[in-house]
Length: 226
Image 1 (tube, rainbow, N blue to C red):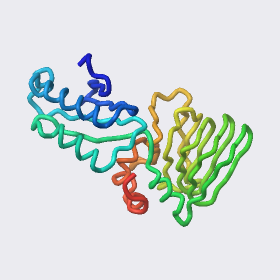
Image 2: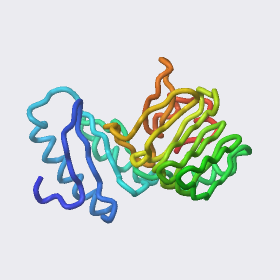
Image 3: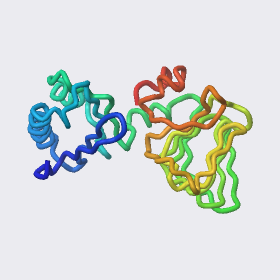
């Protein structure tokens, strides 16, 4: 696999991850996938007989529906291989615009500095910056495509159905209702598509936007496929 320039294959627990380089031409990626899976089908990946699943990461590239179908068809022409999911590190402009146009969604571009606390009624699409020591609170959900280095608090004071969407890798804390998670020493990995929510055990939990239909079905029906 050393000659692969645009496709990176890595094993992980329960399957494999394919990273498609974001700056590569899609046609070049398809060519490499054809070569890769032809070889893998012959090798049967370490002699495995069970179906092998692949998670596909497209980095900062959003594939169209047609492109996703093309990738899936290419891989699943081999009965022993299947695509588990295709994810990206960005949300579509359509999704962001839909969020913005929701009746109770507020667009916020503020820079919240240390010692400042900003409270918003309803849901917020946040594209600003929360510096360390700053707090962004919303009575509803928080959708962040900005920079979070302080504290974000969704569902204030007691809405357990609120969620936080966005990259919290630099945040100090995330709160939903009365649940708190200190992130400074956390090993949780975040992307711009990460979802923080309260699960059925009333604990803070993490997922991805493509799991929203399961996590919050009503919210998924409002904003559609991310």
